[in-house]
Image (cartoon, rainbow, N blue to C red; front, side, top):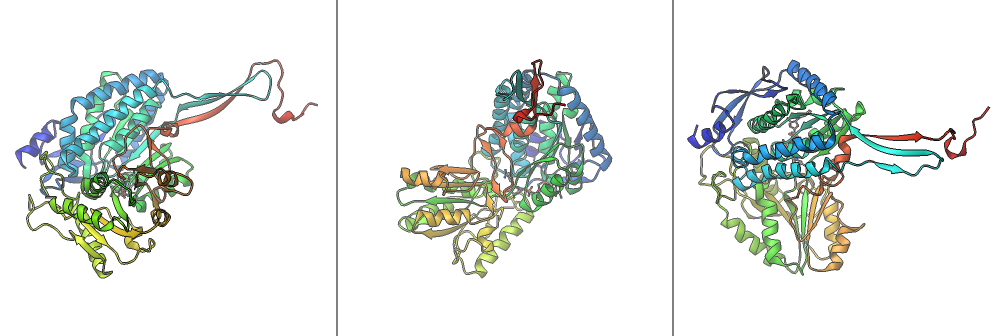
Length: 515
Ligand code: NAD
């Protein structure tokens, strides 16, 4: 293994190419299947991870429940103090953890570090939240009565996460879950186990320092069987799932069948619309980052671009210049903007989609293949692609399916309403953006006849959300919200408590039941 990779792993006491424990419930262990962690840039095997056996999943669940039973009685502001310490622990390892994300997931350095920063930010948010998770007092219609709406800790939260945000998504969930007084058990993507082990080890140290059980933030690495065990367990009160629509559909139904709670953060199929009055010096680089950033592997990546006829040619000319200037590089180098796809399977998906574009006679303006020269032979590098399909029927699979690769499909429109119609015509509803300087367009876009996605931007791209607002989508992107806003309200158990402090016991609605 390259010395640079070994150095990054050693910051978390992970020995390159050796076996490492992938389960934490207060103790490190792992006797299930052994999986490889592979570097997407070079194809090197970084380490072998011992994932959770079925018995270890049950044990971890029991321990996380036990930890919750203790932690739920710790006052919320003291839970906030724990979050403050976790924030410090993460900040101390910001660069090292960011580099590990880059090494294992493949995103470029600044984005790897950015993910860790997102976890730090949500911890800051949670510290404040710990003193503001307020219920409310409702006016009772009966004299001498009070009604309180009270948030209490919920129980055990299982976080199932995707490969593309191996730190931030867990961060959003853990910060709110801990602040709310819950125990959390994390099942990360099987291809980003090392990052989850590193994150868990940072948090475990802080729990230990505070005499709190490690299982409060437990870890069970593994694939589908481990995920299924968590989703099906009556010991899990909330399943927070981030991943594909295909798996999310199964997860959602299973959780619903046992009447537990779920948050589903599934695929996006995000559009940018550019109006003739848009400032192209903002819109062109905005669309470029949205479509090509993280090599098109964000749930919020721009996959559809709708250009007004008046600016379409100029826009595409300027955008293509940026695409052509892009060179694939080692994502660990600070000047690289384009890293590899995460897996060889993703390259296959990219190739199949390009093939499909060719069979439907789409114009491929640039890209459409791998690179002749790549920084490393074993890396999963592909050329970001701009294509113009002939059809603008959004029910065609080329438009209606999320392809998790840097392929941008373009269509030209004449009226804003037509473009909004296209934006809303696909099953997914995560993110969308409009580029305009006309206030009337902004009102239409953000109003009742506007975009139907969970994230609706103006003069800002589809990706790059901040933690302060709630994050999530509509329609087949799932339901529930994470991160800021009112998202914390899903991580608690709500009770409406009527308290009678009078000497009478009147019934509501004036019902008379006296004998
Ligand atoms: P995936 O659906 O393949 O896997 C997600 C997780 O589910 C993994 O941990 C996986 O091991 C687990 N899993 C697989 N089968 C399971 C089952 N039957 N029961 C329980 N768990 C199971 O997704 P991926 O390829 O890792 O990630 C890419 C997808 O995630 C894209 O569709 C992307 O849009 C989506 N995503 C969405 C958001 C969002 O916030 N909306 C954020 C990031 C990624």
